Length: 628
Image 1 (cartoon, rainbow, N blue to C red):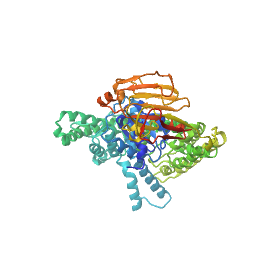
Image 2: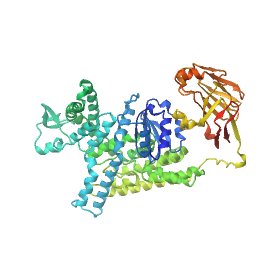
Image 3: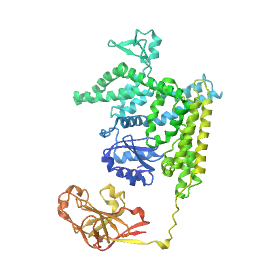
Image 4: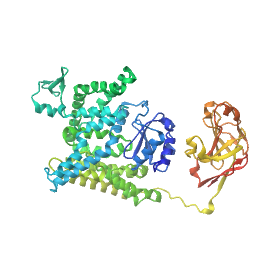
């Protein structure tokens, strides 16, 4: 049982239970659910839950924003929900764009930490060479270079394994596909070093492709797949389709060996002959297109990218930029998508300025953790908890991010690896080939620009309009009493067989095992909700207390059978007035429990909810006291 076990239980219950979860992944700050029915998730309860920053719906995902400790929460959620790598097949109806974002985020999330760590090691190694601490011929440099470069060089293997998990495909077969794509003798460099091409397809055109060998008489267009990203995703996707066909065609007895055999035999040659060359051509064009756009107007390019970056983060769409950067790195050796770097610092500085203007002590207490997180490149706590709800600080941070992005792009800054986030990203701008540190210096200036703009605009042009609530004096505490609506035996709500009730997700209250099938009004008030199946009734007292009386568990499936309502929805009722009658014996004979949760659904509006500790109660007895 992990540290966040209770939080995980509440999250699972409020996304609709484990039966409503198709799959779950996580990124740096978010749990990313794929739900069967998002309508079953209780957004308001999740948003107001301690330990949850907010809830977002984007890219076909139901995202519960947690913060930096999301990996630990993820582990507890996985355990409670019983989620495995072979999760239910995703059947949600997604558009192409949502599907693409979902695939990208799912593929990169598992090894993003290792990717950032590798980039940091490469950047630090380059920094040590640039400052003369190391030489490129020293053993220390070679070791650090190998550690930092390994994941980038063998990128198709990591991508293929993660893609296999996403596509519900055998991950070890995925590993074999990725390894085949980086097999040394099948790379363009190896073929060209061995001799001249036997022919050139599309000679004289933009699509000219040298051919050095054939496979079963079919020309093999060679390219270098080391450090590539997209080909592995597509080959594994095709392989996952082959796997389904082969499984159906072969007896189950032969699946263990012959399914991987035929899948590899079909998918890998197809990858080298068709998928790889086509995808490589398209990615080269895409990378070149971004480079051309950058060259056309670097300032405008950086301005737009830096301005909208935090908006992309809100919706989780920033994942769409990562493959583009990876494509540029693998084809050009650098990335021009540098305009986003200052945005997180602008956001962090704006939130830091808020510290001096906030009136609410609880909000002010959130600032320092959010600033620390932002300095490390994770801005979701700052965005959702502080700047976005206040609006203007978020806009000011966008301005700072845009201007810093325009500066970096105008100065021709390039990143040379996928380094760490926040302050850990500076070494990424050191040229790993030449040791040139000018890019890192410009990055430092850009961060200063972003931070000064974000802080200054927020400090001088934002005012906290929050009205401070007066502190209640103890002497003013009042109470509202709820009488017992039905006769029976009391038990703690935590003993309810339904987790939504037992975990307190719907509110505070008690459980009654009824001895008489009659529900009466526990106070003077109004029938707020009367379910058509008559198994549940919601009341609101004249003092504003909201009460749910839920007769039995899963009794909604009886469709009103064995229940009779004596009031109408919207009707005003008096204390003791008959509301609903039901046949206890018939309901139990039908296989349903009659245990009845009685819940104060707006318990958060009260100082405390006190429950009757007696074991047996009759209608008219005091059941619950709400302190106002």
